[in-house]
Length: 436
Image (cartoon, rainbow, N blue to C red; front, side, top):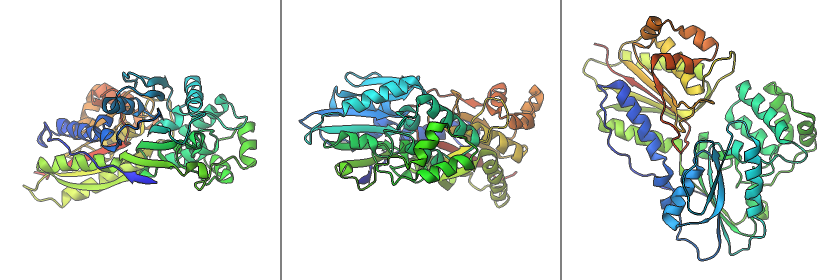
C-alpha cells in the first residue's frame, strides 16, 4: 500500500526579486525547508505502538528522519545508515555513516547489522523504515557471490557513463540482497511502515533508494543489456549471477502483505513551496516539471532558449517570471575536473545566455551535495561571463573538462549550505525580468 502524506505550508521569503542572487538562494532554502524531516515525519507517524518497535533506515535524510521520530515518540531501538557528515544526535537509534555515491565497507557492515535486527520478529512487532535518496549506495549487501568491490566497480562505471538514475537503480536492485523488497521480506511477519522521502521522477516507492520495501518484478536480462548499452563491463560474478536470472522478491510475495509505504516529501512539493513563496513576492511562476532528466548541458541549452523566448514576450512593467524545474540531470564525464550536474547545468546555462540582461538562475541539489563535491550548486546572472573573463577563467574549457565547481569557486558563486539532511533532488530556478 502506498500513501502520500500532506505537505506543510511554506514561509514568506526574506528577499525580493529586485535582489536576484539573494532571492534565488531564498527560494532554494524554501524548497529544502519544505522537505525537512522535522516538518514532514511527525504528521505521518501513528501513535506509538505498545509493542516492540524497530527503527531502521538508509539515505541522506535518514538520520534527520530518525531524529524526528524520537522527537515525536521518544527514544527508540534501531539503526539507520546515512552519508558521511550527515549524522544527527539520537537517544536510542544508532546512526552509522558510510560512503555515497560509491558504497564502502562501512555501509556493508552496517547493512548486515540492519538485516540482523529484522531476524526473529513477530506479527505483533512494528518495523519503521526511514528511506530517502542515497539509500541505494548506503544500504549495500551484494547478492549471491558478488563482492563489495565488484559492486563498487559496477557503480563507478555507471556513474561515469551518464546512465539515467532509473537505469542505475534497476541494475542495483538485481545485484542486491536488500533492495527490491528484500529488506521488507526479511522483516516478515512483522508489520512494516516505510516513510519515504522521494528524489526520483514520479515518486514511485519502488524507485526511491531502489525500493527496499517494495517488490521487484526482476529482469536480469534487461540489467545485462543495460550494462552493455552504457559500456560497463560486469565482473564475472555479476555476469554469471544475472545470466542465472537473479533472485527477485516479486510484488505479490506474501511476505510483503503487511507493508505500508508513505511518501512524506517529494520534489513536486518543494517546487510548489518555492512557487507559493515567489508568487507572494510578486512573481508569475511557471513550473516546467519535477522530473526533468537528460544531459545537464543539453537541458541548460533548452532552458536558455525558453528563457529568451519568455523574455521576448514580456512588456515593460510586467511582473518577473520564474521558471522552476526539478528532476535529476546526468553528466557524461569527459574531463578530469570537479563538477556535478547542477553546477554543469548552471555553467552551460550561463554560456548559452551569453550575458543576457534581466535573466538570473540557480541550480542546486537539495541534499547540499552536487556530484561528489560538498557544494549544492551555483548562481548565475548577466555578469557571470564578464566576471570570469576578468578573472581569467574560461567557461568553455571548464565545460569541456567537467570543472564547473572549479569555475564557480573562482567566481565566488557557489551555493554551499552544508548537509541539508534531506533530499528531493535537483532544484532549478530561472528569474526573468522584462528588458528595459
